[in-house]
Image 1 (cartoon, rainbow, N blue to C red):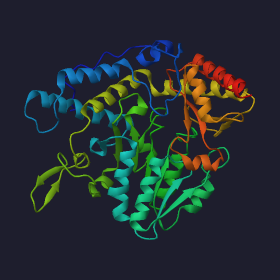
Image 2 (spheres, rainbow, N blue to C red; image 1 turned 90 degrees about the horizontal axis):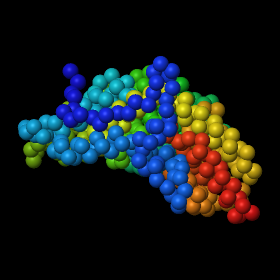
Image 3 (cartoon, one colour; image 1 turned 120 degrees about the horizontal axis):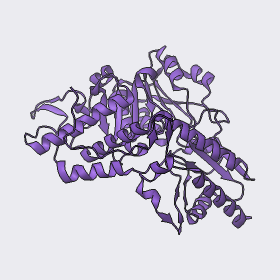
Image 4 (cartoon, rainbow, N blue to C red; image 1 turned 90 degrees about the vertical axis):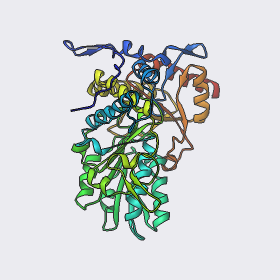
Amino acid sequence: MPIIPSFPVHDLPSHSNPEQNTIDWAALRRDFPVLLQQAHNKPLAYLDNAATTQKPNAVIETIARYYRVDNANVHRGTYELSERATQAYEAIRDKVRRFLNASRREEIIFVRGTTEAINLVAQSYARPKIKPGDEILISAMEHHSNIVPWQMVCKQTGAQLKVIPINDRAEIILERYEQLLGEKTRLLAVTQVSNALGTINQVKRMIAMAHEREIPVLLDGAQAAPHLSVDVQDLDCDFYAFSSHKIYGPTGVGVLYGKENYLDAMEPYQGGGDMISRVSFEHTEYNKLPYKFEAGTPNIAGVVGLGAALDYLETIGLSNIVQREQHLLDYVTQKLLSVEGLRIIGTAIHKASIISFVLDCAHPHDISTILDCQGVAIRAGHHCAMPVMARFDVPATARASLAFYNNEDDIDQLVLGVEQVKKLFN
């Protein structure tokens, strides 16, 4: 029987018409209080969703209610408040299991975010198994969080980091990937969706190719989970990581999924309270899954907020979100292509709603600063993907990343701002 939180989850809005299969996207936008403000006396066009998404009232009020009504530490408390907090916390584990279609709740580990999840796998799984001369395989489009932990493991063990190249459209070259899979390959760690380019990688095919050689696979799902329907059993990945704050939940919370046989065999890389079953000065026995990887007091309110975010998304439907965001991506792509002197970096056939670009007359930081004065919030820089910038021979890009609550007005405001940049610099 699933554990149900004792407190009522904030009433979720219904903006869909099941009979007509339509959604009132304007009404959904009003669920996000941050979006209702102005920036520099202009409507706020928030287009930095790849960095972090905004939070709906349902999430904000669920977190506030937890602190008002149910705040207590989880596990082992024998009083009602602690029991309610534990029920709420553990109910979200079941919810995440369903969201990812994992086979068991024990395969869901709560962490601080995608970065911690990858570091956990690097230190608890890879480091003990990797030997000098072994190889870890990543792609050329990875976020620093899926590069640096593997560099650390290579330095610790004497292994080598191998990089799968990408083509000029910013797609992984599968022929080169197949060639790089070898007898020394011990792990593939690859992003499902590029945060800097928007590319949706053919990860299911890549996983199958790796598994033919009995090579385990970790997927960085930080940018995929908000934009795609994720089924870890269908993908057959061995590890999957995503962050709450990218998917309309609070910061400081993330999820690591791992197949039970891998997690069972792994040693925890953090020690402390709650991850133990018995401690003496001579010996410690670790707790069972999933708790042996969750040392210390967790971000309980954050986990509860993540659950509210998943509930909110369920009311909309990921298939509807995919359609909406693809429409917005098509719209912004066509608008930006009409701007003379603008070049889009990352033109993969399959993309999520992330678009990076450069102007021949202005640095991305100048673009972002001027757009801010026009009420448009974008990201400028290397996007924690310096090797991507080197691959395309640019110092940085301007990146507009869209969510389902964005609209055509936001995009038109972006394009008008870019035209203003051109006027100022020309």
